[in-house]
Length: 213
Image (cartoon, helix red, strand yellow):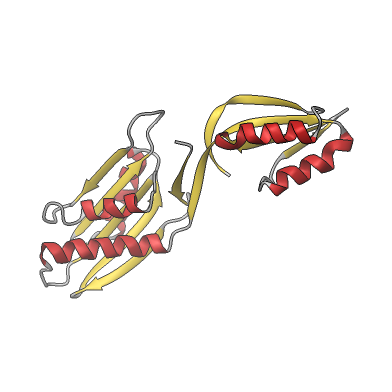
């Protein structure tokens, strides 16, 4: 997998609906580990200590080629009426490393299994609708070294392809350091070699890693 989507890591996104006087408060946040999920659930339970249910679902990106970690919890609601619908919202958005918790304040009227599923789905979607989504891509750190007279051409070529952030070092030559999406790397290297007429050195630094760029 070369890329996937995540919720922005620095914020919790909240949406709320009311169904027959029951409040459903959805909160979407970033999480990388089961420990982070547990911490978020504890925080929500403390903050909404008087709520009846805190239903949740998450998908965590696994290492390497292992399958992603998916989990859902109905937290006392009838089986399959809360956690699974929330999980389907995460899957439908193509998100990973994403946790949605939906807190329910019971309003006194039973909603039935269908009504519950719709309400939990709607609350999760309300949180998702307010989220900032980032794309994580498998990238290779690269160093490009060339003569000073080639700097303008290299800058234009990178900028034209949407790469505008790099670190520059100036010694007897110019060196640009930047991460590049792995699935675009060979194409870009070929273009650079052709445009620079071979007068550019390229070096891969470390192993490919997932980055938000």
